[in-house]
Image 1 (tube, rainbow, N blue to C red):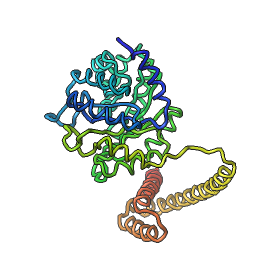
Image 2: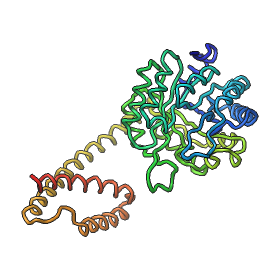
Image 3: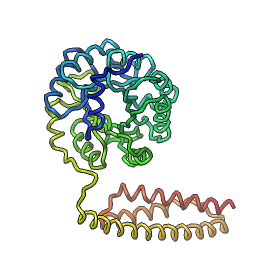
Image 4: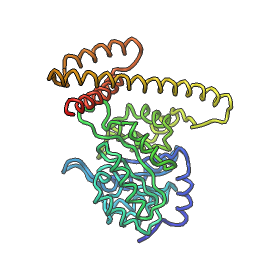
Length: 362
């Protein structure tokens, strides 16, 4: 099996270390002309570090365009030769890994539909043994950090040294705003578990539509992500897959110019002194909140004892509705969103129910 060429490897090492890392290209490679024209326009922006394109496209339903297959790999090779942009493609099988490396693809990524299946991840990992190529791993479709972590471990055990993460959002029933709900807290937790590991954001698959790409990209940068993967096509509305979420290279350049690129830290002593003071205030408030929550749970346990002694059910819907209504009225007055209050109260309510359940059945 082949590894990346030495010349491109040195370029890739520089790109891998760059922050922010910007990866862009069409959702699908449709023709050599389409791919090269897109790559040339992306390279001309001076803002794109790597060219991506879907060669094999795992789709939700049969009958949809599933990519041109290995025939598109020479197109990627030619686009790289013309523009100098390192290339990256998604792989889901050992054969795809071999084909991609044979044609000099510089970096691979494992997609969400593959990450969700440990057997598929292991097949890809086995094909990567002895290969010096960076690998990015997308979060699984469903919100399961253990699957995501498991995929990272399998690839690492295969001997891959350069591993990164791609946050592309998670499927959630009833979700309407996003194609895939960001669930930022899961990406943040994955970042915490893997300190130093690159994590980039994929606004295209989170949004599913181009009008909110900038907002999501900005939030990712504000949360200290290491880069972005954004789909770009010379004629997005005519794209063979995911037309609504792609942008032209010119629009991509406008978006990147509009993002406020902030830093994680500064050396100013006055800044750190002010920040430390505010953080200490948060620490005190958090301590008070924990004490109040503990007090609330003790009261909930006392209620559980009364319910047990009087053979009353734990869940009383009318009471729960009263709590929600009162809390929403309060939230509106003090500037807390109803979404946040709902999630908070749901967590508190479930903990109260669990504690009462233990008392009722002790």
